[in-house]
Amino acid sequence: MKRLLIQSPLTGECRFIRQTGFPRFGHVLLTVEASCTDGLSFQWDVLPEQIPEMFREAVCRGVRRSFEPGAQFGEYAPDGLLVRVIGGSFQEKDSNEGSFEIASKQAFAQALAQRN
Image (cartoon, rainbow, N blue to C red; front, side):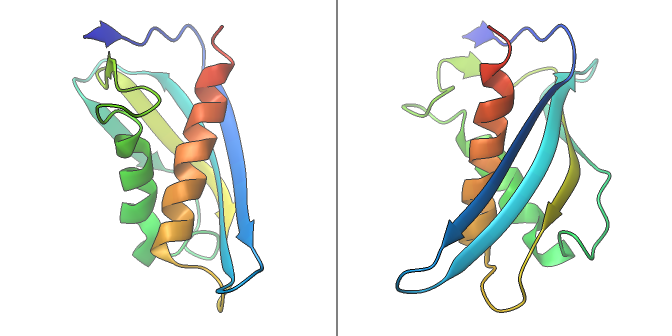
């Protein structure tokens, strides 16, 4: 498998909003940078008032799913990467795990698109 090479921190942001049918909302701001550790690691530099604890696993899951076979970064090994969650927001009524999973996956893709 290929390895992602990142020279400097890359920033991505996604505000996932759906107003039709069942309303959904998730907002994630993150940076991706090289790490000395093996695997994919996460650091939380965000207050619980921005992204509550109950959505943290969904944020991680969205990034991890980017590396599944057939996914956007499926040909890469998720080694030596630090994902730092630095901001975001939620709405009491409209936020759920699925919204944060989608928002983190799209924010991660946006960040990595800058490396070219």
